[in-house]
Image (cartoon, rainbow, N blue to C red; front, side):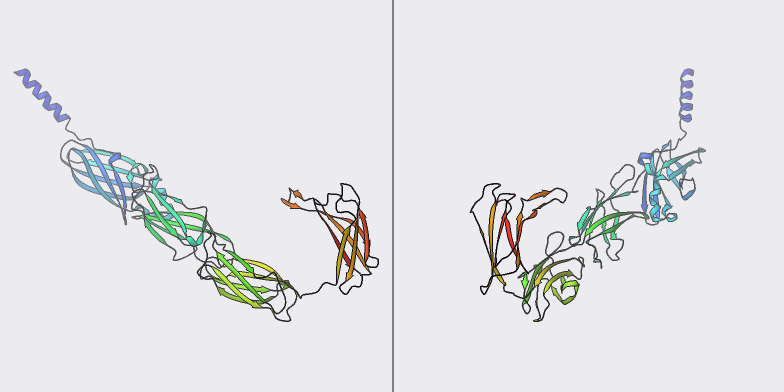
Length: 434
């Protein structure tokens, strides 16, 4: 009996000795949530042996161990795991927007005190290791985009350490140089937000331009900013043509064309200016027209009866909108019709020749009224076989002079040995009247 009493006393003492609490924090179950003007820390406290009143306090520390924010609560703790919620002022209040990403280097120092048992515990948590809506941004845009159809922007918000997707992040995308271009979205359960930005029209003659896309993402008071460069193709293609290549003074020049964006779609209702200039860029006429629903542009201009002869340029330029400054031009000739002064007759002594066999070419020249051309020079030019110029990456056909002589009573005879067969390059005869 005495032995039984001794065992019961020992058991009671052991139970009393084990009744002391040992508060600790379960880091994996502790959460951190950024809210408007505050941050909420939910501490998962365990190690409580019996229902007790506990004093819980937390200090937000920057990388230099300076206290940025504090929170405290008095809670009734029970056995098992407790969730104690502490609200603290947002630590972002003392940070510039572009420094919010530094929060991953911050820490939280916690204290738990049990007055009834005279027990206290403390520790430090890394903000980057807690389950939170802290996030970093990943932005994806095409390397080059045709501005008319807009630029798709894909934004992904993920935890900076675990890379878990963060939902509920408010995203605002805009062009840094353009006010009023803001587009907003909210990240989904996959942390993704999709927006399409339409670049503004700029008064520039550049065919392409770099635009900086600014992404501002916020959840509560925590904000992240990212910038992404996008090359926008602002060059529209204008194809123009005229009904003829050569005009006489007094005739009408009919111009047709089509305007297309860099994506190959036509540009309807686009203002196009057509300028007609003479030599030395002397502008003669400006015509403003608007493309049809199919992107077609059309204009006409009648040449004056006393128009100067020479080469004229026809230039079409887009004068408004996203593709302002895009242009294209062609040239046409203006000349008066002139009858030839004389005719040329060429005969050879054979209808065909062997390689290396001399050739005799007879040339006759006479005016249209029948009289022979007395003074002049006959030149035979041989066009050699075409060859490829690897440096200029183009084909060229050299020409050499095969013979030269003077006219006598409207006739001349030239003897030469062809360098190549007649069919390979070709020959031409030219008479230069004195």
